[in-house]
Picture 1 (tube, rainbow, N blue to C red):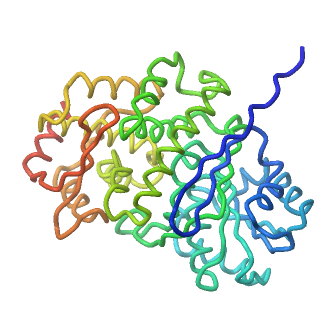
Picture 2: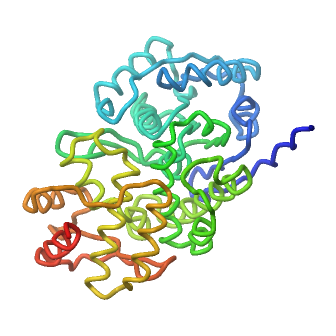
Length: 373
């Protein structure tokens, strides 16, 4: 039986006023990364430092390096440890050491091959090496594909909170090869689905409904190649639309934090690594959905639709056992606080949210009480 031909590459413009770029989605596109760089206007002969972790590099490092060299780039590979606990300034220093060792210049590039942790740290290292060199994002996890790789937010964690140290540094290109998801652990794939669901609630009800109609949204085989690429395209398009309208999170872009305010509390108080980022966001979406129901900004029926889709995607929904005062203290330390007022992204309908900074301590405590029950 003849194999089906690969689907054509899908291209999404991130239409920034300065330094616009494309997100390219295509099955098997990783083996053509060298050609993709040339098409993006990157000149051959440039030094490229590929940053990855051992698991990803074992599968895809050689393919990436060979393609770069075949198209005239001078490519070197540096490995960093995987895991949120390694997302620190000391790990970024290892990337800087490799940049020094391989004599990266201002015309050189860093290429992030891996998940969101690799992408965030490589982007931050590129932003700070020689006061800023180009970076290419090649995400290999679903969460990184639809979220972390697009928009230029880079950084590392501080003991006081997640991503408190960082910089905005847009990539030159984002290349997404859905084939890499076949080797992704199921738990990691499901964590990425939290961000896909988020985009449906934010501004794409069609995306949300596509997921609701899918019989098995909790793993790639349950989606199928065509639907998977459609979900990637719609999610990336929504992220690109928001980033282009508000590159540095002065207003609209803050809606991308839907589910993240409570989610970051779960990550911080349970210990980074206890929950994957997407799992914490899933719990956070259910929590902020309950807050919105209590405030009357959306219905119990819509909250239940959201919760059911999150559960069917194999994600957690129950609020963990956390001390209320610790939750409130952690919320006040969130980087989204302005003038002492905490901002929440609240849903109003599937496809529509609002940013509110008038939520009281008592409302949060009532919400936490309801979540425990």
